[in-house]
Image 1 (cartoon, one colour):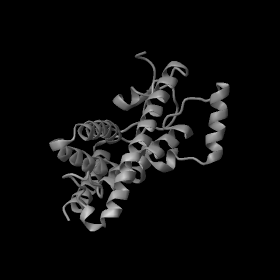
Image 2 (cartoon, helix red, strand yellow):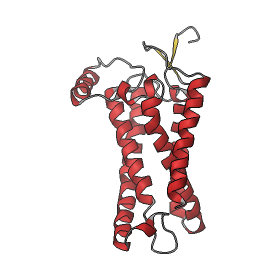
Image 3 (tube, helix red, strand yellow):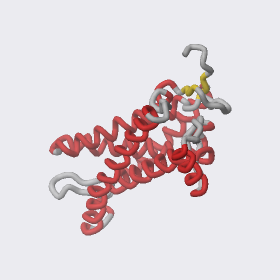
Image 4 (cartoon, one colour):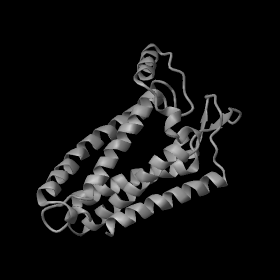
Length: 221
């Protein structure tokens, strides 16, 4: 409803990160399946994804309120308490990530970092290899290639769980988790709004430039 108070939860850099990373993951999967000359684009998508992931780690420290790890990462007791409340219907909507969602975020970031990092050393035994493969032995490259291939199934599982969770909250809990990641605003939650001004966006641009520069240095050695 138009009169419902809205709370800015997700700043623009966080939203752009989310959707850009999703597109890069799709691009990586498609280009890997097609193979051939498309492997060059697979590598480029991997580099871009790694830059975004490094940015997100920095943004988790220097970003706005709800993007910071200290705001949403909780211990096991908080996760168990939230699960009990969820089971009994007493889990109230939260402005940022709830304790269970925080685990999903950490798991996704970890799996994507493993995928991007191992890709730097991987090879396809034909004509394509990661830019850092030349710095390790063939057996090490082959091992990291196996990890890279196996980890894709971890990612598929996490993505499926992520989509299922969004559907569960939308249908069962009547909470729309998708729209806020588009508009940045949530309704029906209390809290302090996230800072999302020009200065914050310039900070994000600087951190992204640092992350991209680090990846560019790695892949051009």
